[in-house]
Length: 502
Image 1: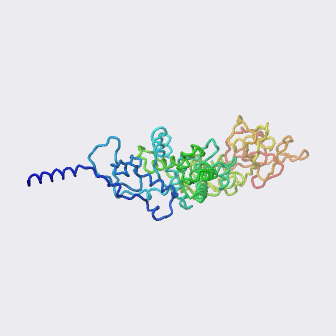
Image 2 (image 1 turned 45 degrees about the vertical axis):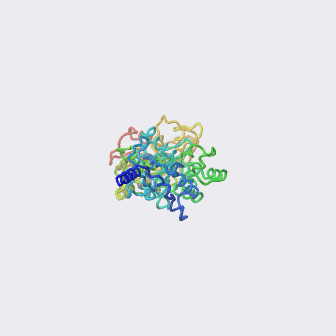
Image 3 (image 1 turned 60 degrees about the horizontal axis):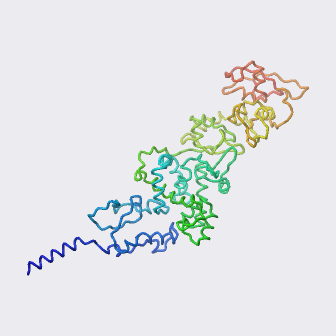
């Protein structure tokens, strides 16, 4: 009898060890501290309730064996203590999350929800758009550090920087079909509302610093209106009026709920999950299969003030760098010089070059000698007609506007017209007067000009108020001849200029 009792006990013991652990999950209560305490959250209350109520499937709530989330969902802010089982599962690969792994709230300062739509964009970036997204990642480190600082200074979550990633791929020259421009893709009216100027000479929507500050102000206004970063981001894409109307129409402040209806465009519905997917990959690219990214160096610069219409070649020369480096730091400049009517324009130069620039620029700058006028091209005008209109040579107009004699002009186009020193020349329809004559009865004064270092026929003609071709003819020189300091030129002028004559 004792042997039978012992045998029965061993059978019961072995049987209980093989039975599944039913009811383990149903004994836990799944909630979030923000729901329990009623604290302020980046989610709306309805989003929190909806998100956490869907964490367990019906089968899990009934006590079935849990199934882990795919690897793309491994950044959740909590983890389940799953029962250990030696049974294989070919369909799923559970990820063991260490206890000391940082929680999501420490990794992101914007809400991160991973659902089917987010996973769809993760896969899209990993496959179809892999090459493009790799370029985006390579450019990201050039702008992300200083952008995050600007967002933080304006009291915004730093991870909103990934909005710029999906807007432009961190390309300051990005331009959309809806005429949005720059790193943050501002359309002209919105950019103007937040202080970004755009005209023929300059487009501050392309300025990394100014556009980021403007985007921070806009996003802060949107969050103040919706109190939810998902709705704020959607508003950034579609406009705040569109989102406010959708919320009122469908009586919900849940972004994901709004995406169920046809009112919002598909682009807006995709905007938030696309931003989340981009942020997840950018923060941990190797996890998602992006290896060996050749990141660009973070952008660094000093700022100096220069007179209006300062040639970028001049700025580059004063800094001892190439003009391409200056252009790269100042993508907002649409021409090869700073804009007119912007006195003391603040231009960006390579970091550490400020002292060298200040030392060299004063001696190189022609701004004290030059005046400029803006000319708006009218229908039927040509470059030669415009030159005659202002009684100046064609070549300086071509040089200052980076044009050639075959360049086509369009109506409404703006040209910069260089004017001789001290002369306020107004357009005239009359024929050009003979160079050097003030009127028909006066005789030109012949004088001699001693060439200084850096002088050209154009600069001398401009300074003396004569025509370049006439100056060449008086001295039997080719217009493109290189002048040697110390040589002398003959001039015929209406009045002597003691400051420049020898």
